[in-house]
Amino acid sequence: MIHPIFTELTECRDCYKCVRGCPVKAIQVKDGSAVVVKDRCIYCGHCVDICPSHAKKIRGDLSRVRQFVQSGRKIFCSLAPSCVAEFPFSIDSLVVALTRLGFSGVSETAIGAHLVNQAIEMYAESHEGTCPWISSACPTVVQMVKKYYPSLINQLSKVPSPLQCHSAYLRALYGQEIGVVFIGPCIAKKVEADQTPGYPDFALTYEELNAWLLAEQIDLDMIEAEVTADSSIVPSLVPCRAGKSTLYPVEGGMIASLKWGSDPFQTHAVAISGMNQVAGTLSGMEKEDLNTAFLELLACEGGCINGPVSSQSRSSATKKSLSSRYSRSRITDRAPIFNGDASFVAKLLDGGYSLIVKNNEQEEKPVSSFISSHSKEEIDQALKLLGKRDAAEELNCGGCGYNSCREMAVAYLDGMAEPEMCVTKMRKEAQSKMDVLLRTIPVGVVIVDDQLQIVDCNNNFLKLFGDLDFSLGPSQLNLVFGLPVKRFVPFYEKFMDQFTSSMVRQYRLHYEDTFLKVTFFSVEKQHLVGALFEDITTPTVRRETVVKKAEDVIQRSLETVQKIASLLGENAAETEIMLNSLIDTFKVPPSGEQDGYTQEES
Image (cartoon, rainbow, N blue to C red):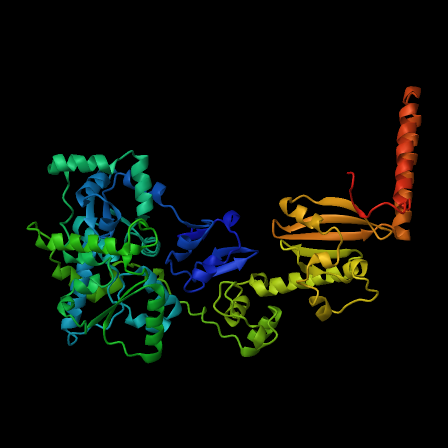
């Protein structure tokens, strides 16, 4: 089965933004592509949100769900309470639409949330009013505890998540043979469907639901008008409507829906949202071991209303307001709402996860191998390979995606990173190669910026135009950088012409009784221009030029001999042109001729 989050390798652009944004660094860079490591991933979906090239994808389950709904079985929809912040229509319209998609019934996931609340309160009553658990409501937090804080696993809630409890409750009411499909803003719910099959069977995102409605040509606007005209077309929610547990998708909503919610000081429970805050809380618990309160931990900042596939067009304030008003309407409405099921909750407390995991081996085992234990010597050796030979070179720039050079070195030792990810290392290598090239190339080289100031040059350039008969060292060369090129090169205005063109242009420059072949090239369009100056009056170049010209003449003569006599005149003309060009190449200019550029013929 495809991982819930995967990378489209052909679209990955080596930006390392996903590495930088991943709260647990579950991204492996291999052969230049950043891939999600299944065993490390906590399914927060942040990499999907921030990938600039959209290379991180969410597994699509819509086609399988459509077949599932058409299978002939009774399929129930478990609808997340955050839907009120997602769809600008009444829940009634959405229930009608889901029924038209083929669901046998629509039930609110908040029913499962109420059962979880009831279990927590029942446990607290028998434990001096406290319940020092970490909530299992957020599957991303559960994954994070299991994979990165194994010492805290025993503090996870003893009852399954609201979705898992809801799935189990629907099966208890309507039979084990039914199907359950969750629809909400969470990618991690797909993991619950994968790891505990049937609780639920599938999990769809709101994006997938919208795609399904579009494919079936179901218009929520039209349904809203129908519902307004005739409310009797709206099927009842099963088994009934949820109450204040619909506040679950808002940070603190779980606690507010408990009896503890009436305590303004929240002495029995604490709500935390956002990955950084959650990680800090878990880390602190490992060190201090002082948790005596119930912890409502949510990976998404502000709660599930800001899930990874939730609408980005509404602010958190608007979403929170919509959720709060919806819960208020449920409490004040006279229609019946769900009041719990004491016998089922007793089974939850007694059996826990055994109600949904028939084979205990299916339950994911904690993996703590991610906590690296490399020696200082190994890390120091890796740092040297990354070009960090001392502490001063550890810039901790974050360009690789890691917070520090040492963290990057550990990732390299773990096989999660490549040396090429180090921006400073690659820049130094590129600069070193460029320096070697400039020092050894047998022609003069200069690079200037758009102010016609020298950015870089070599000794051959200074020997041609600086009247030097010796080579300068690197520190002395640095003194030249920043000087105007007009101090060295005559007719420097020609450089300015090159900033408007990206084409390579060649000229022949006559300067102080020498002929120079000049090649202009663009380094950064409209910002940096380079020039190569080759002295073509040197004996070697002159000899090579004569030989090449002569060979061209001989070759053309041989070809022409084989042609009909009428072409002999044309051959003679071409020979004359070539020989005249040889004469022009080596002719000493008359005393009155001026220095300057001559455009080279292609």
